[in-house]
Image (cartoon, rainbow, N blue to C red):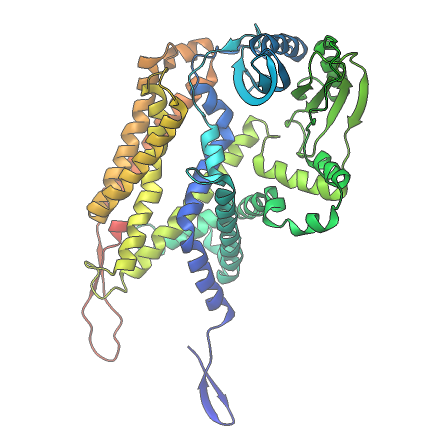
Amino acid sequence: MTVARDDEGPRLAGPGLRQRMADLHTWAGLLLGWVLYAMFLTGTVSYFKDELSQWMRPELPHQVQVPDPAGVAARVAAGIEAAVPGVTQYSMKLADDRNNSVYAFWRGGGGSRQRGFGEGFFDPATGRKVAGRDTLGGDFFYRFHFQFHYMPIAWGRWLAGAAAMFMLLAIVSGVITHKKIFTDFFTFRWGKGQRSWLDAHNALSVFGLPFHLMITYTGLVTLMAMYMPWGSDAALKTPAERQAMSAATTVFIEAGKATGTRVPLAPLEGMVRQAQQRWGAGQVGRITVSLPGDAAARVAIAHADTGRVSMSPQSMLFEGATGHLLEVREHVGAAAETRGVLYALHLGRFSDLELRWLYFIVSLAGTAMVGTGLVMWTVKRRQKQADPDRPSFGFRLVERLNIASIAGLSVAMAGYLCANRLLPPGLPARGEWEIHVFFALWAAALLHAVARPARKAWVEQWWAATALLALLPVLNAVTTARPLWHSLAQGDWVFAGVDLMCWALAALHAALAIRTARHRPRVRPARAQGRAAAPIVSTSGGDA
């Protein structure tokens, strides 16, 4: 607090801009910090969700090379129509260098044109449906990071949007607060308690600052129509205008009215090869067929997400009965293209392996940034407690939530992968049971954090995550025919990579457990306030 003077005498001046921004940064980062940490960590893992999904479906065969898309499309289309009589519409995502099977979903079936939905995986070599275990795979982490679970999807997305707005406030206020933020990036004081946590937080923040700002803002853009629908509601008055808006953002064929005239579907190979000639090899992503076997059939072929930094739709529409090209959509308006670029930057699906690893590393640094900020809140305030050994209820609540949200989430995620290998393949609703295991372990981590002293809870949960992660390659070797040594011999780097990454993460969690266990509190003298004061004992090790 500074003293200002005017004609009437001295008066106290309020806090400056930096102090106000520091307060905003602190509370914006704390109030939804636990939600943000979960969003960041599960979003980070989602950059390899396709590889993780392969690992979680070991029944699907290892793909040595990507098969010809034209032949795959024809085989899988025949397989779908044979497996689902009466299907009125189906869409298939072709196999690529990250997916060893064709994922398809359909409407109708059962011999009638009903509106039921189904999905399944098909072998690109044979076109037959593959009987793999029921699991969401890596898609669970992807969906969780922006819509959570056990709540209506809309509620989850609103919560994710609120957390992203808080994150945006924390980033902007943090940059304003730290006037030497770039200098602090090169400063780290090890073993200095609160100072060390602040140095780590600053370094992690600056290391990926442009990425963190981009990923937060673009995350809001992906759901902007839900968060701010009033502009489109006011501008788009007619069904035709709304349909044009949909066409500018998605590739979707509205299932039209069947004529009742049976006409066989023209060969898909020719349509796919036309798309390949226009876009290049490996650039055909999804194929959607509407009203197969009817004179009104339509086939839409969408451009793959790879190879371009935009999610704006590019597609070719064919007449299903003849294979005649009806329409090519490759351009959208400036606003739609801007949205498409921002959407692509957030998802990172355009990236090759090296860039995807860069996304992963910088996003992991962002996760650590949020985690260190949460821990620093308790480290800083423990010293201000009247009795650090018996802190206030609010402090203990934050401390316990930190333990369960950070270390406990690692336990839950590793347990989810273990459940994939341990649950019986024929268990009803098996995919949901994997998710139940995830949340049961996370809830158990919270109860454990409440029941145990803070330091012991940190250490024990770090070791629990270490054990589960280290056990995963062993479980994979025991329960499947694709152990690590077999994957290495076959050149199956998806399975080998997941196994090796589990051990690398186990080593990281073991290092955190050892570091936390070895940390000892330091005695720091209190500042004299007019008289001698007793020394204050820093017990920040409980938050390490």
